Amino acid sequence: PSHMPTETPTETPTEPRTIVSVESSIIVHNLDSAAFNNDPELQQAMAATIATSASSPDHPIEANDVTDMLATATRRRLQEGAISIGYTIQIPVEGTDNAASVAGDIFNSTTTALAEAVTTGDFATTLQTEAEAVSESAATAFETVTVDEAATTAAIDASTTTFVVTTDTPTETPTTA
Image (tube, rainbow, N blue to C red; front, side):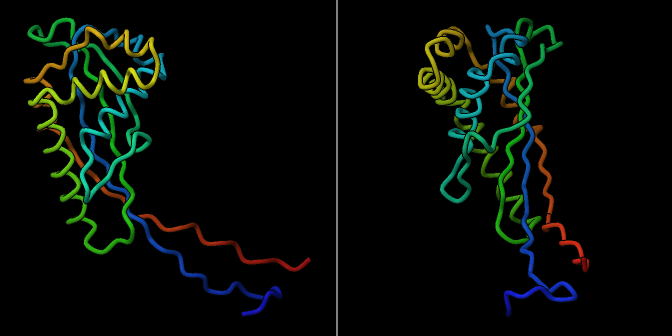
């Protein structure tokens, strides 16, 4: 290798990456969807709660891995006054070997952990703790929020997963001046 420019590009290996995405939602009561969608602190507390609840030693998840959060009013009569908070968990994975298998493992791990957190009540407790860590106003907003266990468990059961294998964009051929 030389530090001098060459007439043609040299081969630089680009390591492929896999991004595994898990899409799901949480159903809650006593929270306004517009207020949630317009308040980054509420979104931050919810993202941290989802990350904490879905994370595992094999597949750690950070709050910034939880994206595309959007709250919408539910339309079912039994869930009147509830909102559905949709989200995507995006987990980067080194390499692409067995990407489909790894995506399946991550999907099973995250959905199982989330369902367990919801059914044991840990999700609601973690939500309040995370909200308090974000701000007093977030803590106040989530004070009376309850998680609809049955609807959220059903939403987690209906979760979907995808994976995308990416590589860096090749560099352009150098031109002579």
